[in-house]
Image (cartoon, rainbow, N blue to C red):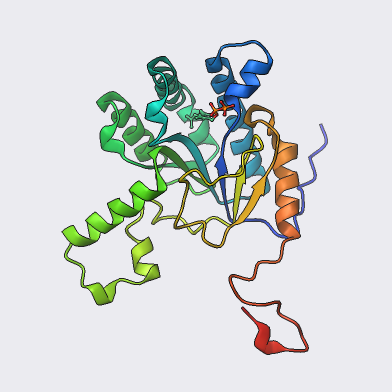
Length: 248
Ligand code: FPP
């Protein structure tokens, strides 16, 4: 078989974060139970991880279970926890082979101790990988993360004058990752839903009506091409050759 030409992107985001939305509607459209949608979403996540490794994206953060998701019916919560346990048990070896370094963001201590153990051993197994750094946001909330950071700062008796935007970031769950360049939300919803509130201050957002289980490699490419055409100014103004003072 001929080698596949590597895709050349004009500008590749170093860090992509995704709100994987629309599993329930995907299942509903097919008259299937909601869990079938979550399983299809998990299958799709596997494709997206592969595509990120292929394209050379260095950081991927996925919003899989929010601090608000505890409000869902218990059978759905249990089903999602089972999916996580299965992935950590059955798929970790393949992720490890792909060079994925797995990390968790969120309140770990509120999860079942058995799940905590699986998460910790997956983190340990993959800690030296550097092909793709993948943050799984599980029991994660952006506001909760900011409160967590404040508690850490107080507990560690950090001097107020030592706190600035950079040092504050060091206390967030994501302290090992750069801020996301691109945040994708599938399924047509246009909200941030408490995801990476601090970190996405200057991210480019990409909203698509495609439901998460259908958001495959091609759709990811489209999002990256769209990102490549955006002009990121970080609060500054357009950098024109005729007026260097515009630089933001
Ligand atoms: C949102 O769709 C999706 C979730 C709350 C769960 C996402 C989880 C996965 C894809 C599993 C990933 C697994 C691992 C191990 C990271 P929704 O149920 O809110 O869909 P709806 O808005 O159409 O009802």
